Image (cartoon, rainbow, N blue to C red):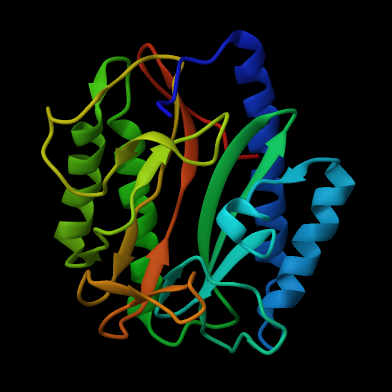
Length: 251
């Protein structure tokens, strides 16, 4: 289904959805501590979902078994929280989360380092991937094209020398978690579908310290780097405005 221009009421609900989504991810980042399990974090998210009176957008989506995706180190995305998956000092922890507030969905991801970073290069990976997301957002405006966003993200990640995951992309979002069009993190400006003011999209660069190739684990969900290199993931849901973009998934 193609993402469509949202009504004023739908945008209002998406703003609240985004605020709640961002607040929960922010809380999880503060609570993240070496020694806890990924399931411990998921249980905190579950409790916050109940506190806010919203619905978990991910739970049950195409059969996903939890309210949040938590991926460590060489896991890029879609990690299933587990009680036996213990977070260690220096782990790169990716939190990918969304809520449904009164029928409107927002999608948000951040990467954190648990405890103290093991290497400066790990800190740089997170910083540069986040900067690539910001570059993608800066390319957004009424009647931009998906390739404009893709090229802006790619320019940042190419300059940093990172692998750009090609098998996973950003997307439209709002009434459903994934709406058309896809928004790759690589491509040429001036290509791809047109985007109009009032549409809402999720931009989500995924970068690796090695090769871009990935594979799916035996659990049918977790996506890992093929060469075992570390990965980072950042994502914002944004509203396209006449002259730019409004980031919905921030406090």
